[in-house]
Structures are given as structure tokens and as C-alpha cells.
Image (cartoon, rainbow, N blue to C red; front, top):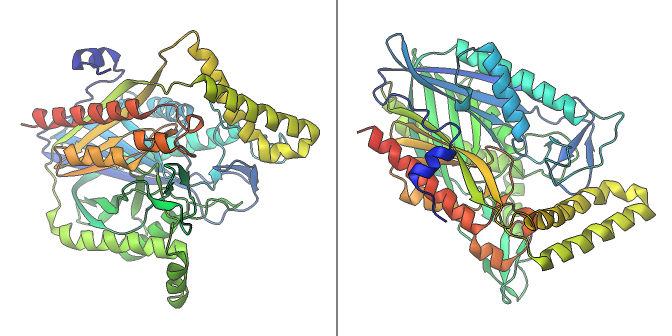
Length: 494
């Protein structure tokens, strides 16, 4: 059901964090925090429990702060933090905001955006059964605990935000885009209409890939007052999942992207990784695999290097085209809104099927407790569907509260969502946006999949009820609300 602007205003927790559209000067700060966990640590992103005893790369949180000023008068701020994590739990965002509020009294911490790159070789972030459906049986001794990591993350990210804020200085910004084939649609569709994530394509039943692949690489570039490039934000519609199955801490392809760009533009360059709408995308090829592998061997390049080179090539080409377009006086407007989206309804059949899988897994664990490492997450994942069905009996129209940000910077706009948002939704936003260039950022919060109607019909992981708290109806409402806020940004800038 559509919600009017008047009703949305009443629902908003922080509606209209509005900045001046006639800023005479832009101030920019940047910082990087090391958020690598203490080892050994349990990793998140697969059904089975994995314990990492080594870190192949550091995990980092990369931060850009922006302030528009008219002389000494501050007209507004925005803070963007990209984290090498699977998603951003609500507790993490709340604690970072609370800590920054202590350190920077009077600062509007609602303007802080945290997003995740969705690397599956990062630590487990939550273990409270009331807050997360996907649980692991983490040993209580000999392994870094979830509560320890929350404390480490909060302290280091908050300190880095404060540092970036205090070090901000006059600078300039511009934006641009290019294309690089990084993402593949990972849902195979078959003759009977079913769909399977990472399904086989070398079979007679294979008919197509389910959706569009977004190959745009959108980039924001930031310079200081000495014309030195100090930071960039790179928007790629592909989660960081190239080495997702390893049992080691790894920032995935973003680490190589950062290292490569820092070698060219300076060791102090801060690089934010933004994942576009990519709930049905991944870096894993679905076909022509042997041909790609042959070319990598002939060029002596592994897949991670190949992905990083593609992204860096697109960024380099964009930089060369726009480097003389840096601007200091740009419209800067930031809106934050809390939306209530209709939750996906669990059917009686879905509840019964989930209950059976949950109970079967529980019985296997009872017979062999060692199986808990492989089956506990699966058991709790399906068990959560049963809980949702029971809650529907007293609340037949459940709502899901979610926070979105829309930030205008010059002719570009940044819009966030918390989901693993299927690419079609991102395309709808970009196609209808009034901005010259639209950056869609997913996983700016606790992520569940948000599939399209087409995907729900096909079924399969990422489109079934276990995978998603919000369904296609909520997805389209998210699109419409985001576009309405973007429209407001352009009206206010007139």
C-alpha cells in the first residue's frame, strides 16, 4: 500500500537532514581503521562453521566525511563508512553513532552511513537468537567472541571517524563512470520455470540466466585544497565473494583494488568500496568457465587479480576523463528516513516444510553432536521461518522498519538500502533518477535478500522465504520512496 509524503514524515526518525544547496566551500576528511579481528575467529557467510587462524589480508573501514560551509558557518555534514564485513548489524551502527556523539558533542550522528562490502571471510557479527536467524555454534573458549569484536569495531571506527572529522580541510569533488564486466547473474533458469543459484548451465534443461547484469563502475573522486587526490568511492554491483569459502580472514577483491590504486595515486589514498544492487549477482562465472580459466593461465593472473584489474582499469579511465572537473561549490543535501515495508508473509506450507528441515537437523545433531558445526546454522535458519509464521497469527500484517539515506553531491546522488537488493531494483532507481549519476549502495544495514517477483516464482536460495524478510511488494515501495526523496533533492536545489 502506498504511503503519502505526510504519513512518511510522521514515520521518519530523522526526516530532512537538510544541507544547504548553495555551499560556497566543501570540506573533506578521510581516514582508515583496521577492523581485522583477533584470531582465531569464527567466520560468517557459509552454513558450516569456519574458524580462521590467519588473516590473509587486513579488514578495513574506510571513511570520508563531507561538510559544506559558508565562511565559518557549517551548513551540514555527511559521513560515509565502508566496512569489510558481511553486513552492518543495527547494534554496530547504533554503538558507533553513540560513541561518536560522545566524542563530537552536537554532531548529528544520524548522518553517519555504514555499508558492508559483503566479504564472506569476515567475522561472525551477531549471536543473539532474538536478533539474527542465521546462528553458529561458536566455541566459548579459544576463539574470539562476537562481543569482543563489537567492542573492537566500535572503538576503532569511532576513533577514525573523529580523526577524519578533525582533519577535514577545504577540497573538491567530481564523479564519473565507466564499465567493467565483474558481476555475473548467478541464478540459472530451467525449462520447468525453476531457478537455482549457481545452477548448472551445461545441461539441456538450462534456458537462461534470470536477470540483467550491471557492469557500470561509478566513482566519486575527492581532492584536498592542494589538488592532491585523497579519496575515492567506487560503486560496483558485485559482492566481494571471490574467496567466500576460505577459512581465513580476507577482504576479498577490495584489498587488491585498494593496493593497486594506492600504488598509482599515493599510499594515503582512502578507497571506499560500495556494493551496488547485487542480490542476484556474484563474481563467479556461470558459463564459459574453461575459456576464462585458460586466459587467466596464459596471462599468469588469478581470478582475484583479474577482478581487481578490471575495476582499477575502469577507475583509471574515469579519472583521466574527469580529473579536470573537480568542483568546490556543489549542492550537498542529505536526507535520512525510516520506512515501514510490508514483510513477506509465510504460508502454512512454508512453515511446515521449514519445521521439518529444522527438526531433521536437530535430530542429526542429537545423534552426533559433532554435526552442530555443519548443521546449527541451517537448523536456526529454517527455525526462524517457523517463528515468523507463529508471530503472524497475532500480527497478520507485519511491518519491517528500515533506514535509507539519500545524499545529493552536485549532479550525483547516493542512495542506500540495507538489503541484498536484486539488481532489477537498482536499475529501476537509476533509470528513473533525476540525478546525472546515481550510486545505489546495498547492505547499509542488516542484510537479507530482497528478490523480485520473477525470482520468487522461480524459487531457489536467495528468493525463498528463508532468505528474505521483505518481498517484491516491499522492494517496489523501497524503489518508489527512494525516487521520491531524490525528486525532493532536486526541487530543493532549484
